[in-house]
Image 1 (cartoon, rainbow, N blue to C red):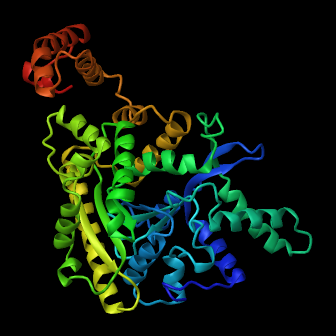
Image 2: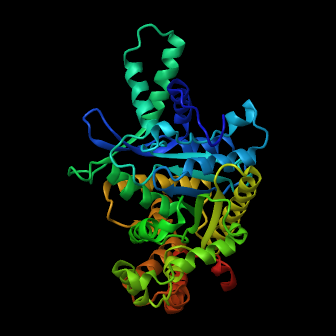
Image 3: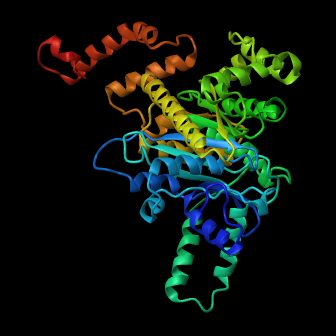
Length: 458
């Protein structure tokens, strides 16, 4: 199949979407009472379990692709995976499936439904596997994405099965059952507006992806509409999501992928640094032209940030901002070069994010990350406007022990929460005399024997 020209045959499309159903990570659907529910299809856990190698601890990194409907998100993810997996044979295709790009037949309807998760072949078996999250288009409206339509048709057919063999019937039922495995009621979907699919896509998905992504790739096709259509969404999305997470380990890196770029542009624009400087230059003065951007700038100035240009403002919400251009189909060597650059920039940003989290002692291994994800699914399905607190979840998953050291730590935490002292060194400096007294009292009460130099081992 041509990466840029998916088949128009409805039967072939249906088969492809059915096969791609297994890559669905999470999404919003309607239950039997037509009430919205958040579904977790277990894709993350499956990917990590299938790539587990021995006792080695692994630290997965999430790269999210978002953008307007029809911008080419799925196509870019597909190119990244196909380039890294090498030989296009049946085995590699089965191990590393790719998204289904949109077709001309459905150009005004989102192709990918919900959020799908794919593995990067180059890093999948390594200590830091890259996982690509392909998010449903943010402006698809209430139209069901093509993938969702095929899933609904399959379910309807499955319920009316009368002639299929037991094996086929079991296989179909098994797939549908797995898709319904983990379901959470959405407590905030109480009005006609909040029950709409578009509301979940624009309000729920961004909070989840911004909170956990190491890199966010914003895909758009026309750089001339960047300020008018994409920039505001990029800031609104980040501002809302940032307010809804507390103690987030690090800000995500942002890469703006200008897809389907005319190949006749200035050759310097194929370099990420020059492309970034060029695009940021066109919107440098947007803060003075738009009241909303000024409000965002004032918000950060009140918090001590220096915000003079739009790039300054974007870097309040993202660890870094970079632009990579992908040419339109035709010059395939150039496409390959630019996709390689995109992969290199994604990898480099993920490495920076890894080191930042490690220094902050907020690096999560594959099991810990799954725990955070499940807690976030629980949290945002119940309270969309209440911040998700990473440290609170960490304490819940790994409570402080009830021994002597644990109680001292609880005391230090209580002092910090009181607000008088904020740094660890100051807190323990103030507590040192009382802690020493407690240690001596513990020795006397419990009749500990030996020299005083041994009493420090608690």
